[in-house]
Length: 376
Image (cartoon, rainbow, N blue to C red):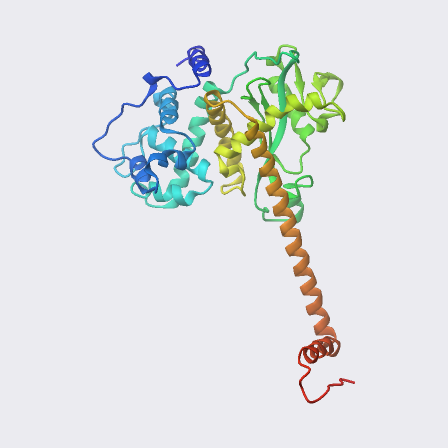
């Protein structure tokens, strides 16, 4: 399917906000697939597919219809997941659930080990990245009536990671001082009207500044802007002379913040659909780029059928607040551990001083004792 014909389908979907009936799946199979087996294990069968993937079945069938038949290889092994439908289902499941445990349980009738499930997920992601980008990642000429000169709204988002092993200098590269956590970052440029992603940067370490990412990412999409400007926040102040197409958000311009909220809504929808980006990354860091690109394309597909709302922006705020609370909790636990360590160290250095207050407090709690204790 060409991109022109797909855009015509999307326009009809946007107008009706529904999936065309002729895209409903008509596939029947005498042998149950892993999808049927997985849905039967859920307590609420009527919403099982949505709970496992974040998409309703009609949306999944529509997406499956749009993908080319040769998007994934069909292997001929007896015990293998060799259909595009099953592989896409497993990928959506791990993105939505944020864990491989349930995904491997679903795939266990056909895959013997969890490592085989992970290899299949990586292969599926790398092969779907290009077809999904061709279908869903494109510049649209939509504009906001009050700011017609703006063609793109850009911002960065963080993906939590665990502290990398190795030398301390290497680990510092992944630590974000702004978010107080180990993470990687990516920049996304979204359409100013409907909020679909138009461009996605590479993955950078958490210590990289947002504007540094932008300067690397800018040459990739500036030819497609056609002279229109970019809306960004105050982190992008200080552009070079050849990057003067940026409209920054200085203090006291709430109207710019109102238009910039569309990119926050995109991140909220992305992380609501795919919880794998809300918790520490479960795979190798090198795999983040492929998974994030696929997730952004799938988010575009979801937005075109379910437009962004204020709830998506609130969801993104909740995720950021949760990261901050987790950081404060870790800092408090670290402070308590340090106090205990110092107290324990003092006890070892001077046990007499540490014993006196303990016995004194014990006697104060038991005044009925017939003797008094004087350690001196």
